[in-house]
Image (cartoon, rainbow, N blue to C red; front, side, top):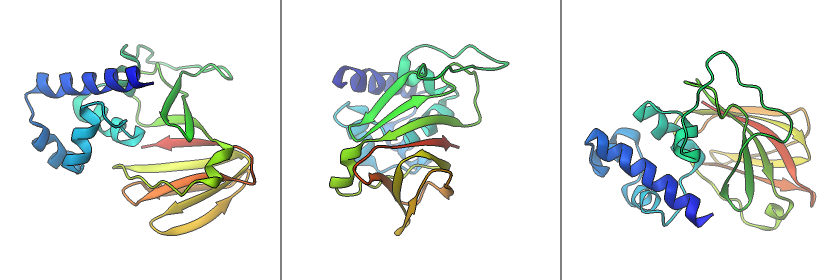
Length: 184
């Protein structure tokens, strides 16, 4: 995991340097906190997925290139069979599977996300990223907080929100929660 974190940070740094943009200018352009961004790019702290989506868009590359180090190639469709999307572990409480990892120039990033059962015992971890997000619960119960509003979602429930607002989620009931997340 630490190796992957360092590799992603190195790819982002190289893109920024190739384009000749300073850390400060990129942070200002994307609305990130300078200290937080520096900890991401140094590999000290993992990039949030939403921030990687923004960075990929800024540099005109697919998220796949930043995370996996290989370009996406498919332009007509990308079929992802059950349990075969690449796993992206960004934070220990969640596991993400990229559902369109190999589609070139996506308009959004679809993920299957598992909130681990033990998230219920931990404080709610909030994050922000530019754009919007759509989450649809498939299994389990999920507590989600968006801009200070907490709500409980069950299978079939969904929420669409401005992901610039502080948001976070955790599984409830001692079981994992599985949901689709579309980051736009």
